[in-house]
Every structure is written in C-alpha cells, then in structure tokens.
Length: 224
Image (cartoon, rainbow, N blue to C red; front, side, top):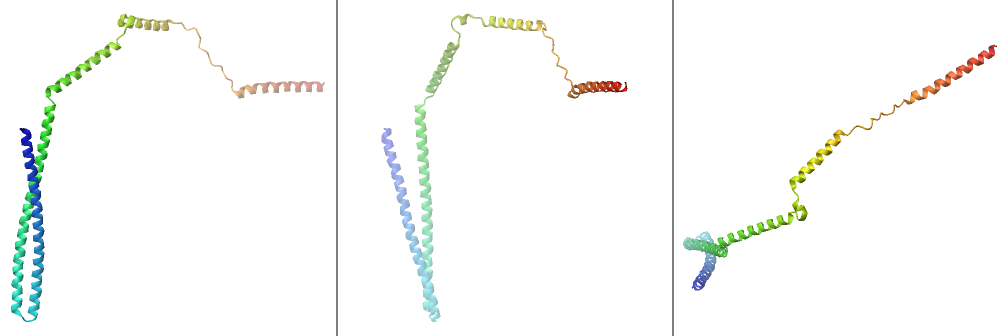
C-alpha cells in the first residue's frame, strides 16, 4: 500500500515540478515578447517626435499636433507594457520562491526519512547489548593478562614479604660491616718539592768556598 502511495505522490511531485518549470519558461517567453514590443513602441514614439519637429519647421501646425498625439498613444502603450512586465516579474519571483520552498521541503523530508531508517536499523537495546559485549571482552582480556603475568612453578610459592625482610637484613649487615671496618692504610703525604733556585744555589756556594781555600794556600806558599 505504501508503495502505491509513494508512486502516486512521486508522480504528482514530478508533475508539479514540471508544471513549475513550464510556467517559468512561458513567463520568460512572454517577458521577452513584451520587451520587444516596448522597444518597437519607443522607436515609433521617437519617430513621431522627429516628424512633429519637421512639420513645425514647415509651419504645418496641424500635422505636428497629430504626430504628438500619436506619440502620446505610443507612450500609453509603453506604460501599459511596463506594467505587464512588472506583473510577470512578480509572478516569476513567486514561482521561483515556491519552487525553492518545495525543493527545500523535499530535501528535509528525504533527510527525515533517512534518519528514521537509521533509527530503525539501530535499536537502543542493540546498542546496550553491544556495549555489554565489549565490556565482557575487555574483562576477559584483563583476566587473561593477569594469569599470564602471575608467577609459575617454585617461584609461585615464595613469600614476597619474607624475601623483602631478608633483603633488608642483608643491607643492614653490609652497612654495619662498612662502619666497623678499621683503617689499615695511613694517609700518604705528598713529597716536599724544593724550588729550583734553591737547589741550584747550594752547589755553586760549595764550589766558591773550595776555590777560596786553594787561593789562600797558594798565597801562603808564596810567602814562605
């Protein structure tokens, strides 16, 4: 049943759109025709003005007045055509606005139908069920990781508290041994370095004294 209504309303919508397009085309054609007539009447009115000038120069007042009368008739027709064009413009604007409104409503209706279809395919119960499955899978994975990381074999029987206490005792014994250990090596003193000037002056002083002694002995021998 819904398919029949869909086809009926779909056909009516297509027909209305086609009618609107045809109406716009017809209005455009009519507007072009009125503009052409208006341009022609403007040319005729200008021509009557030129004729009136020529008759006036020729002192033919009656003929000049007839030309001016025809000019005014043309001007009345031009004004009437202008009003026709204004009405056609109004009609075209209304049709285009109605067409845009219809297309907007159709787009909104299409979006609403798509959203409704998505809501039908996505049930809140299904979402809750999916989230529960995800949570269960994560919990199972956590339990598996805990089992894999747990110690196995003989290492599983060791008490962590006892191992930590034993480690603390070892550290205490090591610290005590370091504090009680005697000092077996005396501190070494750095050798005293004698300046180079002092070291070189001592041999030179001894050499000068020996030379003085030899000179004194030589003088004693000469005196004898």
